[in-house]
Length: 328
Image (tube, rainbow, N blue to C red; front, side):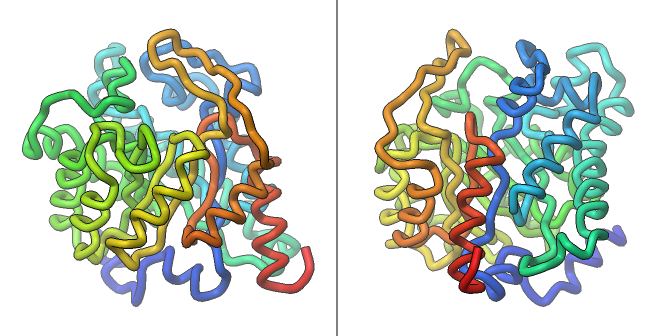
């Protein structure tokens, strides 16, 4: 409860606090594909959450790489970390609790070590740790987070998310990253839970199938309009989506809300959720160049999702720091 009280005493949400100091809050990039690049085997229903059990040092190393690249916020390794998933694997409820909470403590420890060094405090805000809250479809591990067709109502989705949200919040992140949400009913379920937890802020980030619709087929404007009136929703946006759709989605979101818009799309490669393989796409601009266009369209929280790297985040940081301080 002390953690909840600390949130209640804040004057503003963490995103607004950073955006008062610089034009863009820089998120990290891909997590799971970075672990794979480091040699981790993620061919498992637990996906990146598996590494919390097997090699937490690699989780910490990825977070550190992104802080060094210039990220103002890293997202925890809890996207696919659920009580149901861990217990299906044979772990006890207590063991599942410990692993879910460890995703936050690892990120906080890395952030605090990073911030202790004076050279890391030059021309940048104290970085945030966001607790990843993946969708119900991520637990299913069947690609349904790219379809949004799991046919559950708000009450059922609230029951699924409640214990994990409470566990993550108790571990002490700065904000929740409710990400890759494929359908509005799941966003509504999460927001209803937030209302039971005063002072807790979250961003809501949908996955989209084109420049107009989230993966369920619902219009992004309808999602932004519904979320606009909720104070605890700190930002609204898109992640795990092809970059060519982002400009259109930003424009449509902006017609329905003045909240900060968060975007962290994929690198441009396309994921086959059935075969679990990536296929190279075409890219006329670098990721850094594209991110500047997204900002000009109205995005204020920018990072990367699948297949992006610390180098992509460094390119975002280069132009953000340049615009703020007049030098890279």
